[in-house]
Image (cartoon, rainbow, N blue to C red; front, side):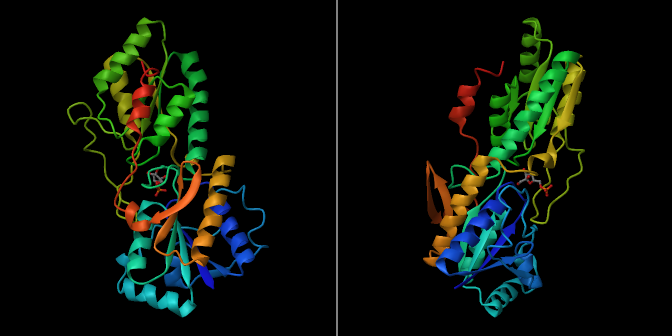
Length: 343
Ligand code: F6P
C-alpha cells in the first residue's frame, strides 16, 4: 500500500507530530508513505517526498509543517477534478491522508466523492471543527495568548490603562474565551455573542469605581458589534485563497471607541500569527501523535471517507461528510459560567 500525506490550509503547532506518527505507524504496518508538498497543490505540481524513519526524526517539537502548506483548492482550477484524479492514480496513491481545517476537509470530502480514497485529520488553532472535541494547535495558541495577557496585565497595571488583546479564531471564540479565563481577563468578547460597546464601558466604569483603574479586554478577531455602535464598514476587506475574508483589526477599532467614550487611556495588541508559530505544547504533541497513529491504521483498514476525531478521552472516527459545512462554536454553558469573572 502507498499513501500520500498532505497538510493544507493554515499551519498550526502539532502538524509535525501527526506526520511523524503516521510514518512511524506506516513503517510498522509495511505501508509506503510519501509527503505531498504544499497541500493539495503538491498533487498538481507532482511534488512528492518519500518519508522514512530518518527524515521524520527530531520533528515532534518543531512548529509549522515539514511538508509545507497552501490554501489551494483543486476545484478552483481549470479541469481540476480530472487533473486531481489523474495525478493521484498516476502516482499510485492508494490513499491520501489529508490533515486540514474546515476548508481542507471540505476538499477531502469532494475528492472522496470523485472516488479518491481519503482519510481526514482535523487541525486548527481555532478549535472550530465540528465532530471533534479538540483540535491540536488550539492548546498551544491558548498558552501563547494567556502568556500575552499575563504580560499585558503588568504593564496595564503600571500605566492604569485599558489593554485590549485581539486573538485569532475566525468565527469561533474558543481562543478568546479559554485564554481570557486562564489569564484572568475582565471582559471577553466572542463572535458567538452579539456584544454591546455600552456594556463593555459599563464594566470598565464599574471596575474603576471599585478602584480597579486598569482592565484587560480579550476580543476574538471575528467579533462584531452593531453598526450603530462600531462602524467598521470602511475597513477594506481582503480574502484568502479559499475565498474567506481575512479577519483582524477589530481590537484597534474598539480601542479607539473605548478611549473616546471613557477617556481612559487604551491600547490594542493584535497577537496575530504568533499564536500559530513555534513549539507545540505537550498536549498538542500527544493529540497529534494519537491522531497520526489512528489515521494510519484507518488507511490500512481502508476506512476511507472518514476522519479521526477526539471524543472525550478516546480517538475514534466519523464520516468527513458529517463535519463539513458546520462549525463548532463556543460552548455557551461555559461562556455563561465564566461571566462570574467578567465584571
Ligand atoms: O484558521 C486559522 C487562522 O489562524 C485563523 O485564526 C485566522 O483568521 C487565519 O487562519 C489567518 O490566516 P492567514 O494565515 O491566511 O493570515
